[in-house]
Amino acid sequence: MNINPQHLPHVDYPAPDPARPYVYPDTQVLINHFGIRSMPVLQRVVDTVAGLRGDRLERDPLAGDFDLPHLCEIHRALFQDIFAWAGQIRIVDTEKHGQDFVPAADIPGSFQKLHEELKAENFLRGLDPEEFAGRLAHYWYGVYAVHVFRDGNSRAMRHFFAGLAAEAGYRLDFAAVDRAELLTACRNRYFKDDMAPLRDCLRQISDPV
Image 1 (tube, helix red, strand yellow):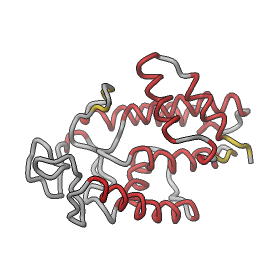
Image 2: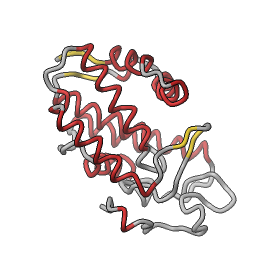
Image 3: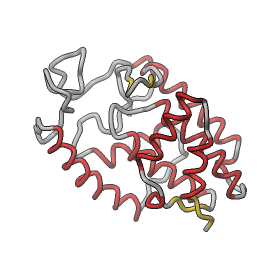
């Protein structure tokens, strides 16, 4: 697993256009093991295949220290059947709908800072529900803003934070909130510097066990 910034750029998957190494030429379709060139078809395959892999992860979560290698292993487990770059941090800078994410070269250092902070907080153990939701929102947005992978960040994050919550004595019920609402809450934090919607979403899905 390549997480060291001096190794960037690193690519061991087809890159017909070095400037756009993740997509087929003249398209927005991600290069994939199936050779699918249709975005809707690829999305259906991702939902099905990564969904099945996700079901397996729910039954048997990957152990780890909630650091960057741990998140990369989760991403690889979810997307290994679809993308050759599954589990590898992105090698390009990216933005989405006007939001810039952490530059690719800064991903390892940015994530390390988050992990050190999380470790100093004892991985959120011993917090009451309100405290837990507030601190979870802080780290959720932090990982979202780093945006480790070219694609599949949200799905990997759900498994990552479900494991973190379980270690802290909570269960995250993602069915209790629309996924688009979580994304909107993250964008609200970015554009309005308001964490309240994200904190409210995470409080809604967090149940002590």
